[in-house]
Image: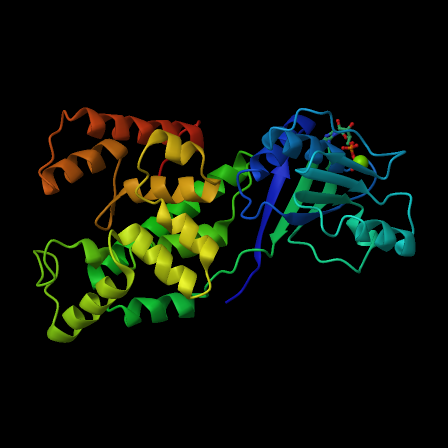
Length: 333
Ligand code: ADP
Ligand code: MG
């Protein structure tokens, strides 16, 4: 297990800095956490916090807390600026908000070495109003590739599903890259791990455990699958989420749990990582990258669904909306 998910974003303007701050509100996994902001005077730390507050739907204005070293926006956001404090005074001030129940964001966080941050954001001025932002997330436990492959083996995951999830993970990588280009926060390692695990227990929903046109399991495989089905239940999304939570990966479990993308409301209220996985999964048919429409046709054929069922059509529309939200400029995969 490793907890570091790190990514870099080039932000060309203060407007995009606000957009980045706002987008981070959709990439948070705890109601309560500490975010360190590091960067020189005028780097854009306060501008970032203004965006974040907007993303959190906080209405009160965020200003530089020059006179009050600390500004609280009800229980949701505690904005601290250590600019004018030395190390000792900084650490003393921070102790007052140690039990703050919401998000604590600290400008000039490097003035203190006595606190732990869940996220650390470093801003470098690279000229012409542009900034290079490095975001380090340490709050989400992520399985290593070795652990992922061990899980595949443990559940006797068939090759064609391994191929599918590998292809989905490649699509998520491209979507994440485009989101970062758009100056939107997303955790690439967390999404990749979730993609590589999203169909870990897909077989619990197979019509028959005796096999189909894609794969005929041997006796040992069927026995493993039966055991998994008894232990984690159906359908496969919450089943995989239960297994991953048990393994110590509750946030990866959360990303996996919504990959079917059930209704528009569901997805619009989920994290960006959940949205990316649900979308990427719709762009891969078996192990081939396809368009949303091709995937919808194939699903209808394979499961002999009614192509004009209003529920089916509403679901398809919600996936198209998701695509427009994630990739407003389109993306060739
Ligand atoms: P800090 O809190 O780091 O001292 P502020 O956010 O208060 O910085 O100020 C940053 C200033 O730089 C603002 O006037 C903002 O409009 C300007 N600015 C120009 N380009 C950018 C950018 N790409 N990101 C953030 N701020 C920028
Ligand atoms: Mg500031």
